[in-house]
Image (cartoon, rainbow, N blue to C red; front, side, top):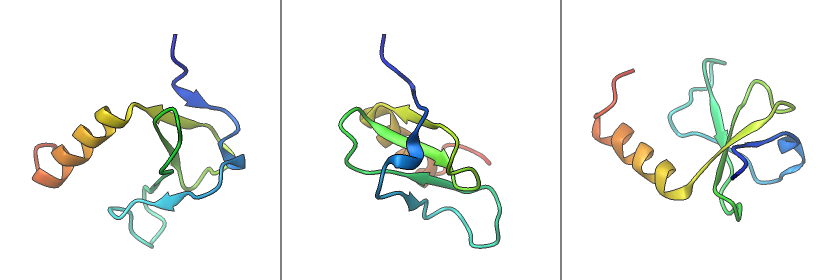
Length: 73
């Protein structure tokens, strides 16, 4: 079974805030590029919490759908 969370994600370096996040403390996510097992995603307000791990192809499809407006907020 593939692990879908990274409990100690604070130890990983290179997190970047999503370009869709604002600077006013609203709902923000951070992603980490270059992880060997997929795309880690975490809540920027809780960097000590776990990160969810998404398959790279699934994450890419999600981003494409967001950018094209297929998903409503």
